[in-house]
Amino acid sequence: MMSVGYDMYLKLLEEAVLEERGEQPKQQTECTADLTLSANIPDTYIPSPEQRMDFYRRIARIRTDEDADDLRDELLDRYGEPPKSVEVLLSVALLRSEAAQAGVTEINQREGHLNFVLYGDVLQRVSLLCAAPCYRGRLLFSAGERPYLSLRIKKGEDVLHLARTLVRDYAATREGDTT
Image 1 (cartoon, rainbow, N blue to C red):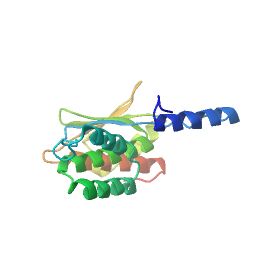
Image 2 (spheres, rainbow, N blue to C red):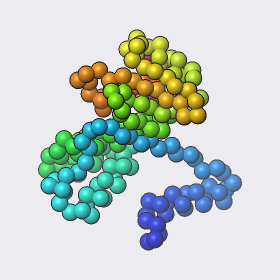
Image 3 (tube, rainbow, N blue to C red):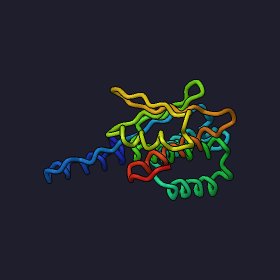
């Protein structure tokens, strides 16, 4: 446990137990996000590099709004009001979690577009999403080995809000809802 860390130890232990039972380990999809936003923990907010790294690690493990609220409360108690860049970092962590659950493996912002790399059976879901009036003329689908959606960003739009909205709308297509 000391050589791999507590989190990795628990993951390896869970996989070993499942393997012993003859079960397949659950595949967990991760999503990366490369957005042109300032999302970091300034050293003026948390001066200790070790504590900053610990919070980066904990933020990366955020999966729910409750997780984010708990961590935000702890930051507030220990270091005072979090700066905007920390709030953005918490929001990006939530976006990554929601995106992974929806079937998105990568989100990146390039030249006025948000690109969402998709996995799984995407064609029907993308068709439902592209039919939504709010995405007409703004959403492009590219099939292939790595299918992706590209959403044109309008001037002045909040990129993080736009990304979370598309991810939620895409997740709703799994249940057959339309946006």
